[in-house]
Image (cartoon, rainbow over all chains, first blue to last red; front, side):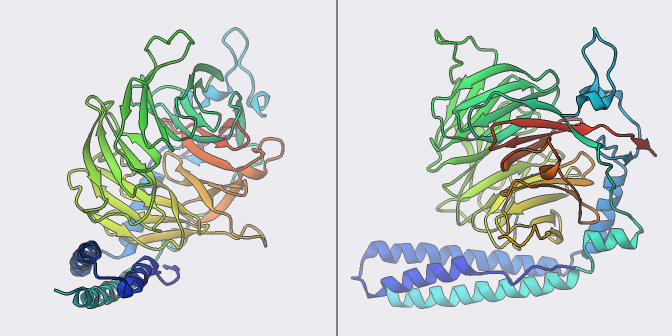
Length: 112
Length: 378
C-alpha cells in the first residue's frame, strides 16, 4: 500500500508568499508581467491536473502493473542472481577467467 | 487588470491547484490496492538469498586522484568511462583493468559522463554549463591530450547528467541546474528541443538526473530538486507527460526499469521509489533504517538486467542490494570486509549484458562486482 507522507505543496505557497511580500513595493510593470506569467503557468497546471483527474476514472489498479512486472522480471535471465531463468550465457563468467596463457582460475582467485 | 486583482486571481489559482492535487492524491490512493512487495508475497515469492561469496569484487580500477562522480558502460563491449574531481575522464577496459584513454578536461568541474552507443565518443558536462564531446579516435594534440570535438552550449546552469539516445550516436539528452532538459543534435551542436524552462511547464528547480527508456527512446524521465520526477515525450517539449509526486526531498537519480514500463528514483529523503509509467502509480517505496544516525541520502541507483535487484548507493557509504519484488535489503556491498569502498558510492552502472556492476566512489576508485557463486538455471 502507498505509504507516502502528505504531499508538500511547498513551492507553490513559498512563491505566493514572496509575491505577496512585494505587494507593498512601488507599482512596477515588470512586477505585473511577472505575476501574469506566473498566473498563466498556474492556470495551465490546473488544466493539466483536471485532465489527469478525468483519466484516473479509466485507470487500472496497481495490482495489474504488479502482475505484469513480476512476469517480466521472472522471465528475464539475470547473471547476478543465484537462481535465474535460462538460457545461461558462458560470457557471464568472463570476469573470472584468467589470462589465456594460464589455465582457467577458480573464481575465488579473483575475489579482492 | 490591476496588480491587486491579479494577485487575488493568483491566490485563487493556487488554491485550485492545491485542491486538485489533493483530489488526485486521494483518487490515486484508492487505486493502490497493493504494492509490489505485497503482491509478490501473496504470490508466494521469497527474497533472493546470497551466500557470503556470491557477489564479489573482481576488479579494482585505480587511477583517478580525486572523487569519482560518474560512470557509464559501453552498450557493446567491456569499456567504462568515468569522470572525476581530478578533472579527467578515464576510459577503461573493465576486463583487463587497463586504461585506454585519460582525457584532461578543459573544465575540471565535471559532474557527468556518458559513452556513445557505438563506443567511439564520450560526453561530459559540469559546472561550465556545457556538454563536451570527445571522439576517442581523434589524434591527440602536442601535449598528448584529446581535444573537444563538439561543445554543446546553451544551458544557463550546470550540466548535472547526460545520456546518449540509445542507438543514436548523434543525439543526447542533458539535465541542468537551469531547470531544463535538452535534446541535442550533436552533428550541428544545436538544441533540438528544450523541456521545461521559463515559458513552458516543467521542473521548478534544478534537474539532477535523466534516464532514457531503452524500449522507447522517445520517452525519458527526469529527477529534480523540486522533489518530483517527470516523464517526457521528446516530440512534446511544451509539457511533461506526467509528474510523479511522493518524494520529500531532491530526486538525485532516476533510472528506467529494464522492461521500460516503470522507473526507479532515489532521493535526499533516503527512499527509492518505483513508479509505473503508464498509470502513474507509485508501486513501491524502498526504505530501511540505517541506524540511529540521520537518514542518508540516496546518491545513485541501478537495476540488474531483469530488474530483480536494485542497487542503491547512499551518502553514508552503504550500497544496499534490494530485492525489488519483495522490497527487502538482501546484501550491503558497503560493508563487505576488505572489498567495500572507503567512502560514499557516487555512481553505479550495470554492464550491457548485466553480468557486472561497476561502482564509483569518493575514495577515487571504481570496483567491478560479479556473481562468483554457484548459479542455478531454472
